[in-house]
Image 1 (cartoon, rainbow, N blue to C red):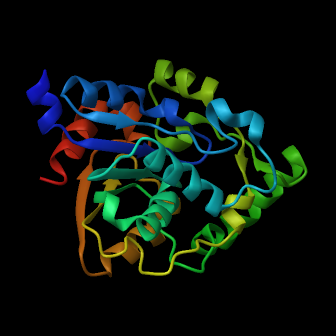
Image 2 (image 1 turned 90 degrees about the vertical axis):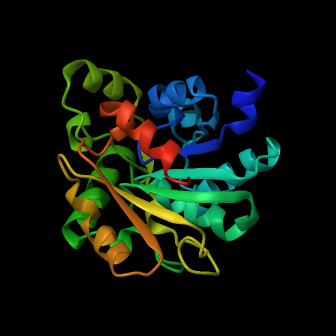
Image 3 (image 1 turned 180 degrees about the horizontal axis):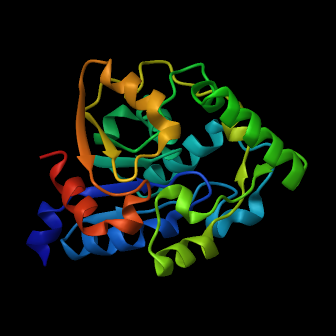
Length: 244
């Protein structure tokens, strides 16, 4: 038992839009069973913190959510994983506390450069549709939940499990800018993981950007966007091996 803990890695898993720390339960169980430490924080206004939803939540809030967990738990040598929209938060954390991080994993992530907002990296028609949906559903405060099929969750039982837990996402995190001083990833070891089957088309510009950069590793996993739900075994193996 002691040896497993000594040799285990520390993972901080950051969820994407509409999700919460709950989405990582299958992967977290597997990682812990293999002797690793795992933290799955939920960002402000989502998941079990959905009662905190407001128009004032920004990308800075999402970064602070993760920074504060790392500080409170006194974590170091972290494999920091950001799924989808969670890629923004891990970029923010890498800029704020580079010395705490061992490896960054952008899991089918939206990648935004410093000084830009997430909406800057999405197609104009997608942005217009999301603004319209937010206005109609919440007076412009939040984005309503999409169906689980959007995330490539096709198994009926899994889809129902995800559907019950999704929460409206604060649109202000899409309109606020990512405040980082250095480059995305802050020159840390970093890997982009593309979920290929089916591929989530809204993220193609981010993938193209990553492929044009130096210093990124690349991995594919043949599952839908919510890999932690649809392919937990494969994703767990990938995460354990990514920084070795």
